[in-house]
Amino acid sequence: MKNFVVIFLFLFIFSGLFAQEKMQDVVYLKDGSIVRGVVIEQIVGESVKIQTMDGSIFVYKMNNVSKITKEPIISVKEIDVSAKPKTPVVLSTKSPGTAAVLSVLIPGLGNIYAEKVGTGLWHMLVISLNYAAYMSDPEKNKWSGPVALLLHIFDIYEAYDNATAYNERLIKEHSLNVAPIKDGLILSLSMKF
Image 1 (cartoon, rainbow, N blue to C red):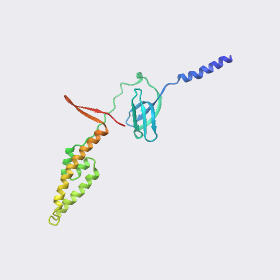
Image 2 (tube, rainbow, N blue to C red):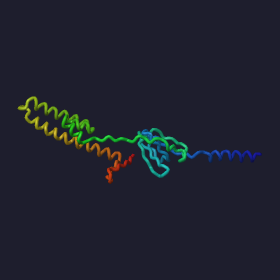
Image 3 (tube, rainbow, N blue to C red):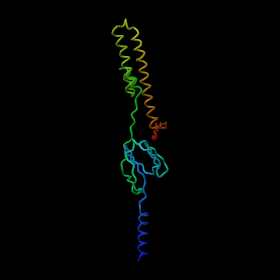
Image 4 (cartoon, rainbow, N blue to C red):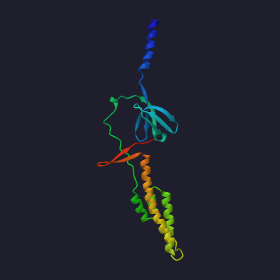
């Protein structure tokens, strides 16, 4: 009887160990994405590196991570394929033409539109003061008018250039690749973390 109890206890303990579900790390991102795999590196307050079942490795900044948990591995049968896809990310580009036209109308406004607010406000102030000085007394401030005009032309060019640079930065940050095809353009997106 004593041997029976020992064997039963032994089988009970080891059956509990073998019956445990296999666990995986799950990273929940603030954009709603869920990444399952094995966390291979975590730098507290900075980043987390996770390797998925297919061998892919993803690195996320901690400010993009909602939570990290351990959960049972789910089988392909348990995945809900009827779930609606996430809303695509819309990247708002800046039109260089619009930036130039805004700077023609109001000096500096095109740079503000191109998200160069400091530059735009500075141009607005300097160019407007030069125009105002020339208008108030053209004889005394004869150089203010031509200086304002040259600065205004430069501002128009710079607004156009800043809008173009904004779009290039946006493309580089989000790794957008645009390639021509027979009937139009093909756009591919790869995110780098």
